[in-house]
Amino acid sequence: MQQIALGTTGLQVSTLCLGTMTWGSQNTQAEGHAQMDRALERGCTFWDTAEMYPVNPVRLETLGLTETIIGTWLAARGGRDRLVLASKVPGGKGVARGGGPITGAVLRAAVEASLARLQTDYIDLYQLHWPNRPVYHFRRNWGYNPAGQNRTEIEANMIEVLQVAADLIAEGKIRHIALSNDTAWGAAKWLALAQTHGLPRMATVQNEYSLLCRHFDTDWAELSALEEMPLLAFSPLATGLLTGKYAGDVTPEGSRRALNADLSGRVTPQVFPAVAAYMGIAARHGLDAAQMAIAFCRTRPFPCIPIIGATSLAQLDTALGAADLTLSPEVLAEIDAAHRAHPMPF
Image (cartoon, helix red, strand yellow):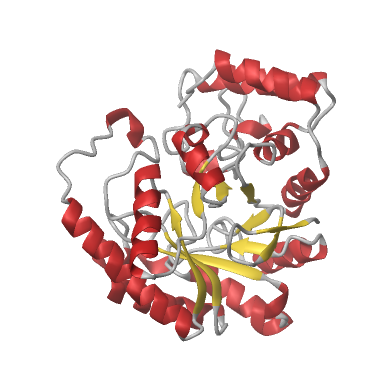
């Protein structure tokens, strides 16, 4: 698999990133190990996890289990230097630490706990899973209200977190700090404060992006391109909607929808006509619909690395195959027309 530069970090990463959030819930440890083996065999060496994983559901008693599964794989296989490993610290309204905000002390404690579970001395990319501030992600865009925030307190917290990140980098525990589920204003503020105070620069952002969820295409796209802050695009298959397996409003046994009926707000009256439009494009051009959706993310006018995930090796093989797919101008034109006809299906 092709290796590309990860923004301004100096790291080289695979063009696809392996997501891990099902390991410990929908997947056993053995199945997680098998996925890691397959990904490495296929050249996918950029892997993403988080303290709060696994999901579906997120539970206090399973926090960190996915990292533990990765740690047992690393202990058994070795070769940590073959990988670029990313993880995250939750805050805000998560279940970890009683749902408190991300502070400098929380960042340090979370990093050190993740290192122990992962059985490694360092994490290449450590992300703030979501901001302490209100954000519009996860369907909150319909009632998003950014008013009433205390900018002075926000900036003070950002500086505190960046100062601890600088210490952790100096200690060799993390290599880079990054964002997730953040806004264009948030990213711009983090970058400005880092430059003003000589602190670490936020390297990447991990936000949702797919044919069905394209919030990133405007202000965020400009910031990402001009500031060399790559998007790590999670849910490029819109939690499986873009594979077509839920077409006709069905719920296959063992699927994510069997655990989460509305796929966290993604199942709406508008979504199935949109999915049908993209399924039609793939069929007309002889493409696998899932591979087309993943490959689309790699065509964006901003740096974008799709995060793929699977609950079976067959699904993983399909997703990994997207690394070799180049979409024709004709396919991209039809995708653009479908997007205009179905602009915000959830």
